[in-house]
Image (cartoon, rainbow, N blue to C red; front, side, top):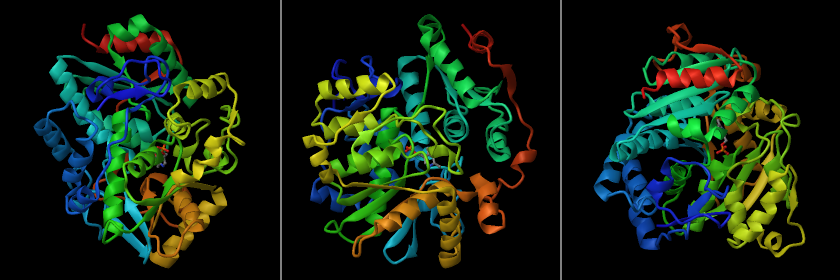
Length: 477
Ligand SMILES: *Cc1c(COP(=O)(O)O)cnc(C)c1O
């Protein structure tokens, strides 16, 4: 399997060559040169597999330069009931991503039973093991530098903790994360994890990370890398649970399923798009946004208009508060018939802070064949959905999942199972659950007293020189 850039001006690469990197050198995103196709016979065989074996079957089509036995070992140690054990009572954790029935034809696919209670663990845990494997082979090290307002940072830290050859330097705005999120990250005592609380807001932290990444000499000397959502291995790991969810919701490969996906950076639903391109019988990919509806707007109008930071609202589904969707370029590459020149033309507008408009083009005329529909939710919609789902089905869902259920139900079709992806557990967003239901969500066993655990972090001014000095002091030369 060869990987190509959506901008068309980068050499072809193999899976492990793009594993540790981010953007392609030409500024594009990597995608398979062509999508592997899944035959009906394979689909029927895969239906019988455990999650780990299914993950191996899917990923071996993409990670073709990792020896089979190695990939199998990595995947088996990642997808265990031990790692994904935080399910609600009654869920079968041996399934890794159990399917919960709300009513016949409407399901929740539980993707948030990993260590940080959000779906990002599904891919990030694999990434941790893949990174450790690749670095050991290359006798190399990696220092991951990132900025987080919550979910991504914690998922990265829990994936990389204790991994040989890897350190994590994670910046967060001091005092701006919830007590739960802060405790989740700052209670980690692993010597390879460094939490840096920045005296400022999230954008200050992000700007510091960007400044360090733009210092190429420093970046090279200290082997600085990232784990953002454009990482191809993360996208490929997410393809697996679309297959798993499909098998759980159907009896045979003759049936179709629709998936509803709470979306931010378009990483999760991009994996659904690829599963569909591989031949998984997906009827609709239902894209749900919150008030930050840049993607909903595109799928309804054909206009993609990223927002400024000032135009980006802070909502009760904060992990979807994005101004532009970093993975969206992958879908557009397919939509324009994989014409890299066209992608370059469109993104020259986006990268200059502008918008593009596909209305009136053949691309827009043909968009129906990709199965996307879109909708959005308001804060009131999410509260309402949390209440209704709790009252009607006795199931508590978080604000992001509620967004997906709200929009999913608007597009429900009779005879087509609707699978709503659960992107976080309600325990992560206590305040909004109390607002909706007048009670606290249950916490998974072992997390009850998390805020009382000893915490470890470094408080720092929003000063790039200080950040560089801190990294240099903690990376042995
Ligand atoms: C990251 C995240 C999302 C958005 O996923 P994308 O892949 O960025 O579209 C939705 N919900 C939760 C809880 C998340 O952490």
